[in-house]
Image (cartoon, rainbow, N blue to C red):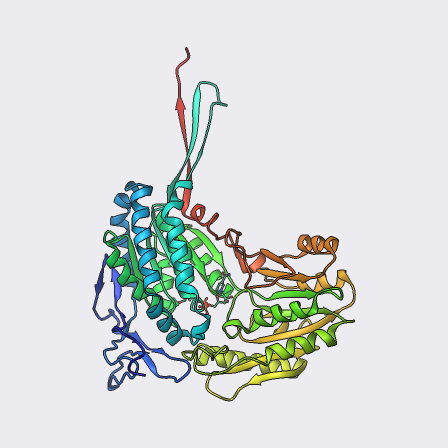
Length: 502
Ligand code: NAD
């Protein structure tokens, strides 16, 4: 294990362009644990507990940002803002381009760090390539910050222009940290904002690794600040900070509500929310059942079900449910559980004991309310086998709450109306899918389903690169994507110029 990483893990706070290796004011640090072996990757120092890191001998405790650290980061970002805003799109883009290249070159190390923190199989790591692509796109994407002009008001030239908010806070989850990092940071910077990114306490290491690359790319101090820490105090301090003008958040709906409330109670900062899901897939009797089964099982198995868009509810027409479930089950059970660092592993453990215990609670609910037909607790570390429940009533908590594990409920329907009603009977609305060869029906369903994305004969995580991503209802507000995210970090200003008559 000692040779897994080539370099020492960075665990300090990145504020004002330099790592500030200092104890947090509350003296707290925290551990990052490899979920497979439960070994400490980066070890917090608690009194009387010796440091015995096996993965990398020079590991240091992960620094937990305090309210004071957040204040420092905001002050640094605020001071750096005017110069960064006025630098211009081309020059800002040059920095983003450099960072894109550096991320791509670090693919191997980033893959190991993400696997060690999250337990996602290394064979499923595509994140560095995607993050590099996002920074690469926004290296020139800033040019599309455009307004309008009109002469419609007599004796006036009416202009609208787009301007950055100022200091933007970016708060990300642990399931795809690097992709979230890039998806928020690249457009925020391209638009001319300065940023503070708070990573998840469960997976801070790739964000800190990229902070080293940011130093290498030569970004001006204070433009990018990266802090580690829990929702409380660091996330809460950012959400209620009077000098933070906008927040882009991805995480659970519960945390989203807290952030929205904190923003409302302080300075009404602009808030973008990408939240949880309980995505339905509907399979009609005329569908290609083999393809539908292959795709829907991958959707809920990928990353051990820890995916916001995972289709956790599947509604199958009663006439084909037996055949569909057999095909689904064959593929679902064929996964390879094992060490996520081993390239042949396709199913890793849940990220930590909290997630694992939470899923076990839902397994118990499923067994009480419905019928477990395959899977369950693997009774091996934090592993949960790909699990199917059948016949779970629609009002069961298993059908209504986000499990965030490899657990699917397969139920039946007899009419199109019934399928739509069941699919929409949820407070979530992130992604829905429909499998049918009937084009009319596909279009009717695409229109009727309450979801930010509807897949026809495809399901999550499939997405178009230039699509708009986001949720209906409690799955969020606002949209992200290469064509949409820049606008999330821009204010619109009207400039009205009085002209003299001829
Ligand atoms: P989470 O809500 O627990 O945490 C997300 C982030 O918010 C973390 O950085 C956390 O430290 C921070 N946070 C927690 N409490 C906070 C507070 N009071 N104020 C400010 N910040 C706070 O979510 P998670 O467990 O990290 O991630 C899983 C959730 O994220 C799931 O619900 C999943 O569906 C959702 N998710 C959504 C999308 C999407 O694009 N819609 C993508 C990935 C994950």
